[in-house]
Length: 123
Image (cartoon, rainbow, N blue to C red):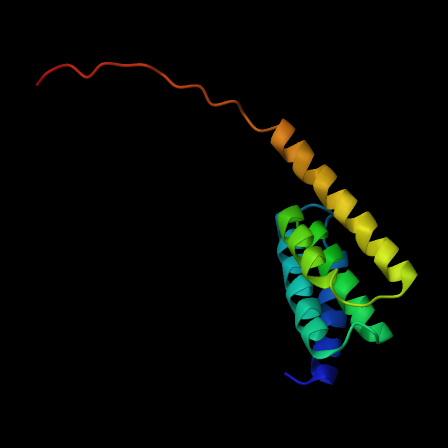
């Protein structure tokens, strides 16, 4: 897909995702598509270009909106090697902190699993 087509697609995908109920399964699925498109744009456009910064931050933000904090952290780790403006780097760090907080919350709310002892009777 060409860059202009990707930009049109990501704009449509963002408008669609934002029109859905926040946190719903449909919205999360739509934001996964946004993250995929932003990630694709980020591979084409360099980080030193504003459009490249926006795509990288957009991919991380969309991953968070999709309920995928681990993916957001992984994308941010990949993008942290790129050269950003100070404001974009600061925003990326904020997004990582938000993703880590979401992961911590998910882990804290996980059910505890305890082993159950049982004996199988001989057949």
